[in-house]
Image (tube, one colour):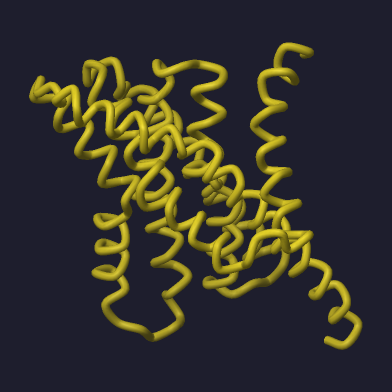
Length: 229
């Protein structure tokens, strides 16, 4: 237990730094948003691309793990969707939002630093499969159901574009392609990805602290308005 605490403490301490920076306004909101965009669009994809491309494909991707992770997520999705519809008498869109929230985590930001801290680079494949299961399946299904009553057309194409152009998904697929074909990255490219990906942990975790602060503020505002609703 103590070892777990000591390993995870620096990770959550960086989240605390991001929270404190936003709370005390030492960093402008626009700069924090830029940090969030940098980690999502550049640093995290570089890290995952290098990790996946640098090991054999069969070591990274385990069909049994992917199937088990996706099945467990699907079970939770269905249970929450049904409970929201029956117990809370919610419409399909609201129930789908509840189910999606229950099954799709912030794995893209918290996953890499936690996985590397506890499992090292051998955990990259499991992380990639979990991200693909959440983003390409659970989130897509949830988005379709949430838009079911909106009357908007072309939701399928929007989800497809959002998935295929997701920088993290693109990095995982490209890394898998390189690993599957046996093509090795040039040493200069590997050093570049290492250097850029090295910023993924601090940048993503700091952004996570900002997101946590925003969530607290929104919750307080909603709580104050509840008596008026």
